[in-house]
Length: 89
Image: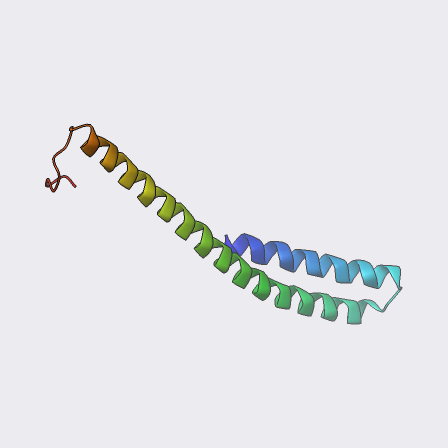
């Protein structure tokens, strides 16, 4: 996920700087340097944001899975289909 965030934000930043340079008729040399700098900075920021988002999503999915398994085990135990403290727990 972090790679896609990094690529998306980097490309967006580079495109916006290039668009600004074209609209304001700035020299191509300075626009290219600014666009590459913006792309690098926003790619790093996008990578960090993507890493945080990936961590949060993984933790949320893992917690939801563990809660569901616990609920399922309790339901089986209440129905008398498994014994408390069995080796399969």
